[in-house]
Image (cartoon, rainbow, N blue to C red; front, side, top):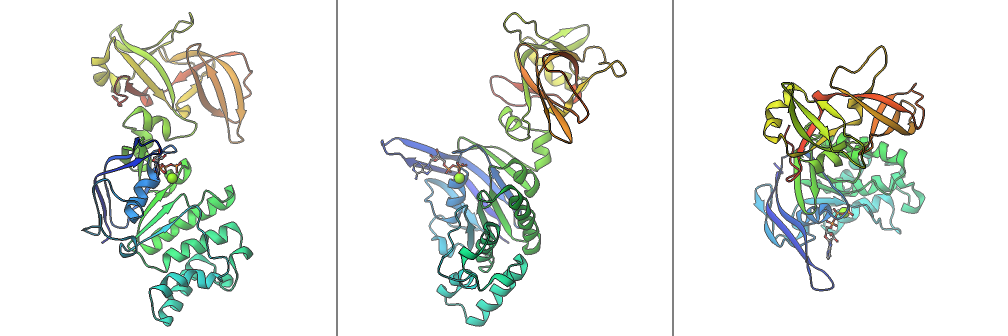
Length: 377
Ligand SMILES: Nc1ncnc2c1ncn2[C@@H]1O[C@H](COP(=O)(O)OP(=O)(O)OP(=O)(O)O)[C@@H](O)[C@H]1O
Ligand SMILES: [Mg+2]
């Protein structure tokens, strides 16, 4: 059992001017045994600092961290039974791949036969057996990264920590290593914590994702749950690409229905769309108050003579940019008050600067309280 539990964990750094920097702010998190947990968030939000505290490379200012039921606040890194793989996985340049992987075990005075067995096993898992006699400079970036992972595997740690291990690799190699690390997780059944900037890595690799911002946890959930039910506007805007479209406005009760009325800007009147019945109960207490509506680009559709917008769902917008992506087209649209993106079929040849009518799939709209940023429906 290698469960990792963080309770009220804080990290305060003192910067050069003597000011306190609250890098990690009251983090509470349980990473289950054998779970693959991803940390994502913008640069500087405290991902690496949190990971380094789990590893013991950074002192904990307040709170406790427990690994496998034991509080490790005062346990030195080498006794925590964890292995960490960094972005800059410096391999020893003068040692062979074999020696690079064996070195940690040699320092720990493991018997030679045991070391040999573990290195061969790790090399087999990673498909680098033919490279064992090479030096790091004779390897590709992806192969070097595999050696760095191998160095962690031979330790048979309770917990693997990865801090953006693939960010030095080119796009193709990243995709390959991404699937390899996922396979490794299944094969080793180990607890893994994986820090990344990369949306796709977060969505595809994690059992669960922890989204951080400014030192605080915003939401912890399974990837699709985060996408479909973001707890607040930050998570809604951070998870997903292109990012969720946001519209400022307010709720209006009229004709027995609740409407979202876009905030007018520069004299352009705001659009008005009928909200879905499923949102009415939650929106009722917001009537007359400012509100933010979020819609993902795949939930915005073009209308046509054959498929007109149902009453109360159509919005007119100007096409500003057309981006053919191959499998689909991104339409950059503007209502006058807001710019937003719709994803439409690949065959679409929209004319720039022309007006089109689009339809919002209001059943899939998200609404956020402007003052708290929390999701309300
Ligand atoms: N040794 C340090 N002294 C002072 N401030 C630090 C130190 N290390 C990190 N910080 C600050 O703590 C905050 C969190 O840093 P951290 O490295 O954890 O961010 P991150 O989420 O890993 O970012 P990135 O995605 O850029 O790697 C940042 O504001 C950073 O400037
Ligand atoms: Mg970092």
